[in-house]
Image (cartoon, rainbow, N blue to C red):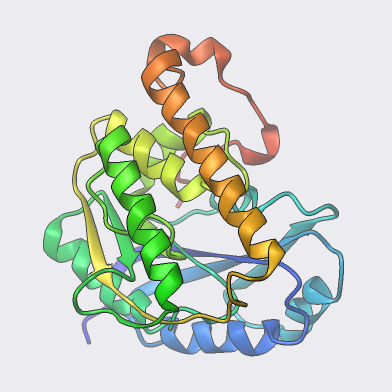
Length: 265
């Protein structure tokens, strides 16, 4: 396979995965070693609350950098923290935990080149996706995405799956404007990108097997409710406050840990 001279950055957020993190990272690395890109993998441990950080370090994998911080701040914060320390273009993020098959990284990168995309979204609602996904979750996801499309204009069937790839320029424009750090950060990134004129946002198939407890579990309901609250806040900032627009730049909240640097190679 002909090698691509671009550097690919792969951001892997991880939280409370001490038992599986080493195996997960080795699996992702095996996939990356076979693709056409040189790469760096940046693993962000979202809170050093167990042995996830230590076990990831012990794996001692080439081209893999382990970073983190003491307190849990949410997956959105972790992804942005990793992106701020990346050097590559394009930039992928994939969840640790292996619900999504990392072999999908190769396919989503090929789709990005085919479409000349700004953003590629791994989608469990893509017709070619292979998804083991509870029916009640499918219904809720479908209703949520319909709501999102009506109120944001974002024509994406699945904003929440944990595999996406971005052109670096998109992130340089988008990340300084973001506020969501936990539940609906994927939606905020996509919504703001569209607001800024990045319309080449396409979906690619994934292979997904959910490890979720069913919806009778209180934590799942709390997560869904919090995601919906975040979504309403995004719509309010987008439509009413116009917070994300350039003329509101003085209102954006600066965080030096999330400062997205210009590509240095």
